[in-house]
Amino acid sequence: MNINMITMKKLILMVSLTISTGLFAQKTFTLTSNDLGGETTKTQEFNGFGCTGENQSPQLFWENAPEETKSFAITMYDPDAPTGSGFWHWVVFDIPANVNELVRNAGNVALNLTPKGAIQSITNYGIKGFGGPCPPEGHGFHQYIITVYALKTDTLGLDENINPAIVGFNLWNQTIAKASIIAYYKR
Image 1 (cartoon, rainbow, N blue to C red):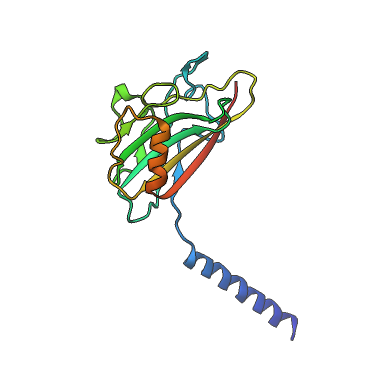
Image 2: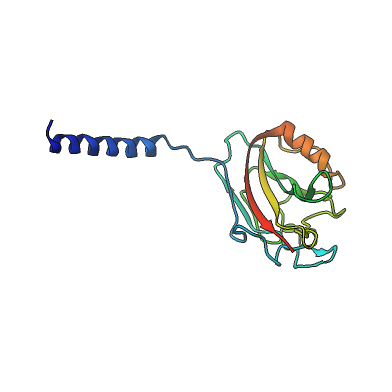
């Protein structure tokens, strides 16, 4: 074989791989935020427990949920909290299936910015709605895992006074798919 023939075969192989990758690529369930990069800021930081942030929940957008999704839930969890069991900062469930975004500060229950029917239950701060990051000073970076859950039920059948562990158990039982983003914070 001459060099031109080998080069042509390589070119054909590369084009074929590129085309087949595009044809068979799957769109995955994805969560993004216009407000978060790799770290949270004073905008999300809790206002209390020694923290002085604005306590605004981030804007969240999700796409490519499974077709059979009947509702969504959102959680924000800090596995690095020195509690022995982590710390739940936000728990929202019964978000209708036709919704794919929560606006900035939707976690402020007084503003009523969540979709109709969505429930924001108790966090580990003992409050309803969003409770932003507030890691102990000098404890290093904590990771804040924000997860959207695509659920196989319209409603979890729980109310706003339920604790995060019970919500978590019900999410485990009803989840079809989930997508997460992680942001870090330290004081």
